[in-house]
Length: 255
Image (cartoon, rainbow, N blue to C red; front, side, top):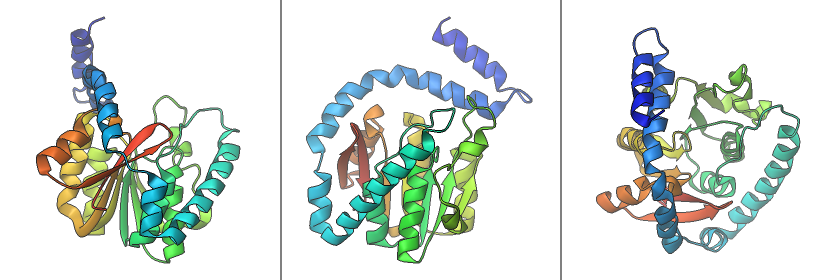
């Protein structure tokens, strides 16, 4: 079955009453298959601009970097143990040592993230906010339709004692981000780890940018997947940093 035929099927699914949100998600995924050829050259571009995480962050604040490493080692051990008992694979996490460090360094009042999954990043953000004794997290996710009762797995790693700072929205980014900014005001830190397509990243960043605080940070995971991050920083002429974590690249704006 060709891509054109599949698109027609999905477009038909998008008619009223035919699960439009899911159909839209599938359609976007299929269209982005055409961009897979971008990953290799984008990895080369990332490698040309990469910074050493430990060296850079230790120069900024060596004590906080040591703290971030200790937290990350504990999280990794706890997550490995806890997730090993599940009947499904929820995948890995983002660059949580970097994320913890930046939350502790910047002491944000409002953090917004997209893409929760098992909750590596959510647990990291909430733990850092608790250490700061201020701030809240608003998260956007969309339940994984491959699993039975998928909502039960979202944020599985998040400690119960940290959840009072957390609000979770489950309508997907295009529905949830407008709801989030309507109730949070300026966003001090935005962590993007959801729809990895070019169009998904483009929508989220274009939407959230007007709501960023003057010194707001943007962290985007898996930028090697397509040319979006490169195109964005080039066209907007904004300074950026790139770090590597577990053979994936993370882009940071505003640091």
